[in-house]
Length: 282
Image (cartoon, rainbow, N blue to C red; front, top):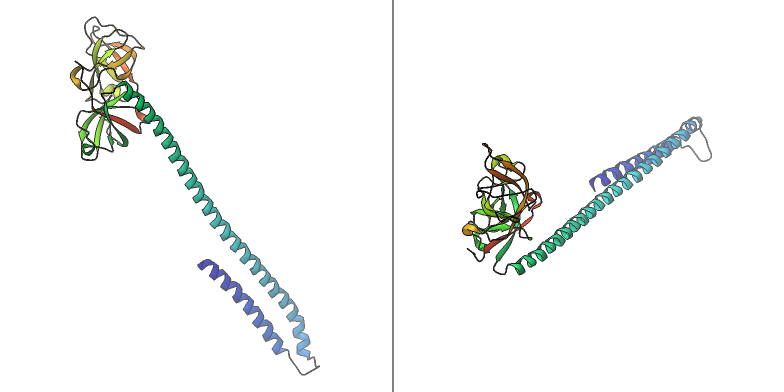
């Protein structure tokens, strides 16, 4: 509005100046009725081009004023369109997020039907740890929602994510399956060999874990599925941990261990489910 008034004031000033100049020139050249003075003849020659110049200036200023006014209108319209586009994009994102959450909840319903003893709480992932020595994140629920230290954390498909390792009133920390402080009782689906899946720093950067502490004579193969054994009571039995992608031998060449690729894609986690209670089967 200030720019509009400023431009309009300049335009009117030039027009007023031009009119005043023409009136002044007319007065200087005015004589008696029917008389044309020598000065009037001389100034007539000067006045005509001045009138043309002033008329051109006024027309130019009027054109510039219209251009600037239209430019401001286009800028305002452009800003309005940008705002409308941002609102539309936000609505689309919210719609996609709601649709994805509905899919997760439908899968969770299937999991609950298979495990009627599970008492579960859903929560959003709000912050990942920035430490290079740990793999953990913060969720948006804690003690006020009945979450306790040691509770298992899974996806809607029942894939192991990790375990609650710190709890506040309205938040909690989840250490993931590949964290150096994590260990889960496990067995290999094809052979039934039991062991432990543990996090190890040298593997953490590759987002994999280690299947170790296998019984003597246990055989494991690439492609074997690794499940929770339920031993120790920390996790329910039968949850999917991941798949063996490599079998290696410890230094000394006698003890085998497996590299386990977790079933869960840690990089895509936005929502997790905490198992607050379940039936322990020994």
